[in-house]
Image 1 (cartoon, helix red, strand yellow):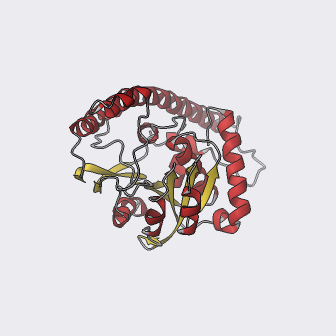
Image 2: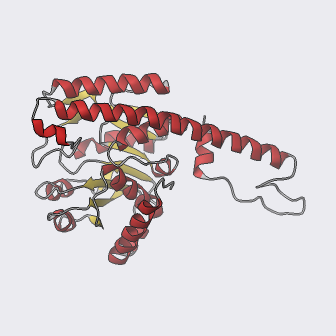
Image 3: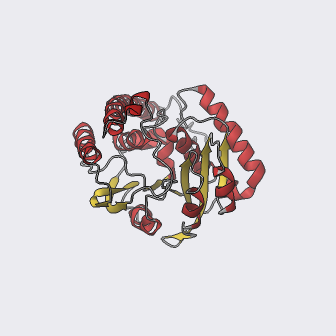
Length: 317
């Protein structure tokens, strides 16, 4: 896991210790599939969402991890009562930080796969097998649902236009055709979440997607449905200007900031991928010449341990 801000690592370390103290082997020895949910003040919504989640997906047992991101209501109690393991983070850092912590918990608990969904009930749990299936089959490393290929209930034309615009932008940037960059129902091999630097507190969906593509992982999209939020209100794009209550203004400003993050993430991860590739090539030359990290002495009976996850990912590019 790569942390841009060391303070985030301190918070995450403390949350994981508290989680481990509470749940013991339940969290340190996870089943094959970890369902990760970031939640912020989702009282009234989180309980039914957790209760509706499957105990198996694609024939593999699941564990539910809810990261409560500085909640000031009864989200923690409701999620725990519904059967989730809850990481209670005392400060609100944003959905991106919460999911980053959830990914780390899944990886360190040895879950092979991660599924993400939202805490507001907008996604259908029955479609989890649709997103996980290609990953389990080895057809993809990362699968996202797509409302463009499936369906959506929203009538917000600005949001619909934004989904199409940013999908086109990211497709152009990465060379990978994507129809929906912000869909929250996703599945992936757990290791891919450790290859990308996740620094965004809010706009994490595209940050992870762009990073995964840039590092050469196999991506797929499947048709899926997004429903209207039934309880509570959206936490996206909270800005003082939104209090003007101009129709569509929330999505407009959200989109502007989203674009800045998308471009910044692409160039950052492109440079990191290139650096990793160069380092991998240098190590290979050094090993071939019998020197450098990982080289094998003639008298040695075994090779040195392999490279990091980032290096392995870079080899795919």
